[in-house]
Amino acid sequence: MTNKPAATNRLRLEIEHLPHAALVRCHGELVAGVTDILWQEVRPLFPGVKRIILDLKELTYVDSSGLGMILRLYVSAKTAGSTVELANIGARVRQVLGITNLISVLTVIGENSIRMP
Image (cartoon, one colour):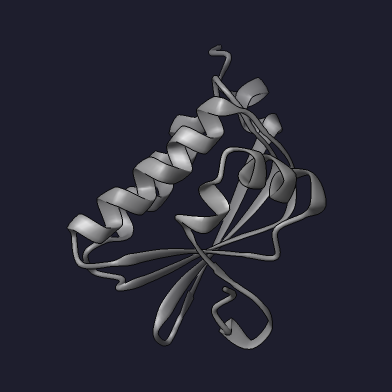
């Protein structure tokens, strides 16, 4: 038996394929030790899927490894001709993105997929 089940308890992903995008719902914590789960599930989506939306509504915590992974996905998608957008960012995660100034670098969308300034 491996330790993977314990890691996946910290982060759970649901991927829904929409007509013009893939919606990735993130649940739990995006922290060191589980960031590869996000990479392994999302990376294969591009360049086939041009728009990937990370729904962070149920993400309760993100550390520096998690931020690094979001940035890695963002850059890799852009290189492949796709986009990664963040939606439904909770207060704690928004605070961390704000402190690091990544909120101004990443594409953040609101209700009805409207891009936020």
